[in-house]
Amino acid sequence: MPLSKITSNSVSLTTLATSGAVTLSNTLAVTGVATLSSSLGVAGVTTFAAGTAALPAITTTGDTNTGLYFPAADTIAFTNGGVESMRINSAGNTFIGAASAVWDERLGVRSVTGTGQVGLGIYSPSATYASSLIRVQSENATGTAYNLFEGRGTGGGVKILIDGNGLVDLKNGQIKFPAAQNASADANTLDDYEEGTWTPGFAFGGASVGATYSSQTGRYTKIGNVVVISAILSLTAKGSSTGAVTITGLPFTAENYGAFSIGQFFNFTYTSGNQIYGYTSATIIQIQQTTSAGALTNVDSTQFTNITQIIFSATYRI
Image 1: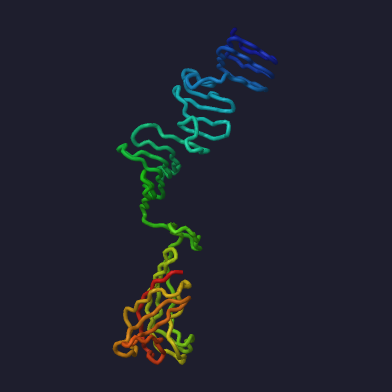
Image 2: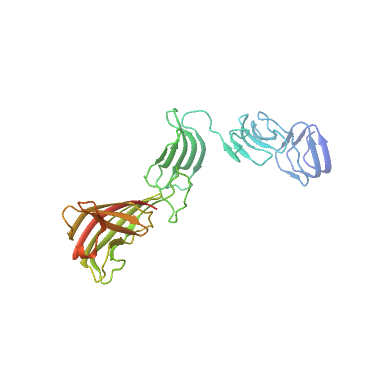
């Protein structure tokens, strides 16, 4: 029943074919094929059959196996060439290349079978960096393995990769930790890495009145709860303080009895046969000596000159 124009509240037809405008304020029901070469205006609700992947409910002329259909209650699906390509289910979850969740995911993307396929790709719109920024579950070029994750950045090319065996490959070779440590109690978790400088000094009896230096240079590396330090201290005047010698200024408060090692000790008086030792305690290093008889004493300010120099390193826990 070809019509050029219908204006009505309710129309029920087996077939509708029109080249003009169709305007309805209520219901249009067509059980067969509705073909419009112009426009359709509906002020109420338009209802379609559920359709299938092969014959979707909403499609286009000449390509009837591609379009939109409704496979289940509260579910919308898209089909391409008679094969479902995307679905939004009743919970609002979206699946591309799959009809349901594999790992209870909100967004599921499944790659098609074949060499070099990507499960999920996010691409840069910039012509300068026209390459994928993120790839998830991508098969390699030979089809022999999967990379679980690829991240790309400035200039293109992979910057971080997690392969199918869980190996993390950092292409620029760097990991950055926050400035403030997020401490972990887990024995197998690395929660911090830091490099920096510190300023060592001598104290005699806990004080350093009048002490001056030509060099006070220290460096440290902190890995988790372990600190490795090195330093050089060169006096130009030891000042007026007296008593047991300590090295001050440790960059992190230490547990007691971290290892201390002297590389060189210049312009320092000690008895032949004595051995020099040291250990960390809080923010200082206590320097001690043992005699050939095995007696242990503190190194004293009387053994220092105005140009004493020490090069040392230490490792301690915090």
